Image (cartoon, rainbow, N blue to C red):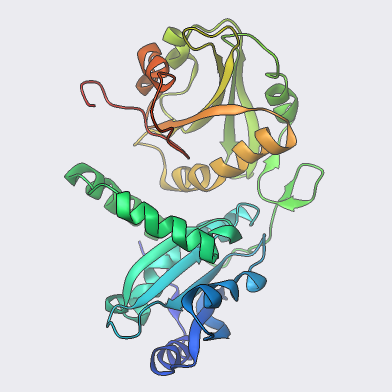
Amino acid sequence: MQSGIKASAELKTAFNALVSSPSQFALFATITSETLLPGQTIPSSSSFPADLSLLTPHLSPTVPTYILIKTDPSRADGYLAITFVPDAAPVRQKMLFASTRLTLVRELGIERFGETLFCTEAKEVTPEGWERHVRHLGTEKPLTEEERASAGIREEEMREGTQGMQGREMGGMGRGSSGNKGLRRGDGVEERVRGLLGKGEGELVVLRIDVPKETLEVDNVESGIAAAKLQDSVSHDEPRYAFYTYTPPGESEAKIIFLYTCPSGSKIKERMVYASSRTSVVKMAETELGLTIVKKLEGSSPTQFPEDVLREEFAPKQEESKGFARPKRPGRR
């Protein structure tokens, strides 16, 4: 279902001004009272990289926003729509802005936007971040039919995800004792995750999110779990985050792996909350609790992480992949 949010007449007027004015480079937009409204207009300067540098002062580490950018005014589709959703933003705002990003471009004219981006950090909206993005596009492989279908499903989930949110306050949630916005942390979460420091192979800490309470909780803690039995200790029916200590072949010390599983039959809201919170969970473990996570894997089921997949992940590679890697399917290379 659609979220019911529409672009205001003011936003449409402001965007048309961006299109027609050679002196304007970008337009910020936000959501207020279930309406898309215009924000700050950024003037053009000497060059595209210089123009990008003007954006970051207007970004907050806790407030989502949209940025409409003029990339090539000579083209009919020479505009870029950036959805900026920082990790520390309140969970409901994350969901609302993510699920409305397609509505935004449709309301303003989808034919205008040659590209859309989803960013979580201000450094992605810089000249250096843009260069990395361009290099990535140059090496990106074409999507398979299955991957295109999966992308379409994710878009539908985002459009449907705001059902039931109408009229609810968009307030943030306290996170630990720091006062940051995001998920609350339940009893024992930090202690259990921190307890993996220096441990040997087979230690497992599984976390879950109580979605109605917006709270990160300990789901399961086990010791002596062999890699071949890992799938038996993680839920097959609901999304989960898991931290697991694994000793790669030929090494003497255990390494910490982060696993994110999200079964295809999970509720839409669960899938959105887990997907939008996973980076924050990893940052909590690494930055606040001192863990060194050497692999971050994701899949739709814990059965996708048999021992041979973990072993293959640590096999020597010419170039190490970054970010969240999906495990290879059996029989596929």
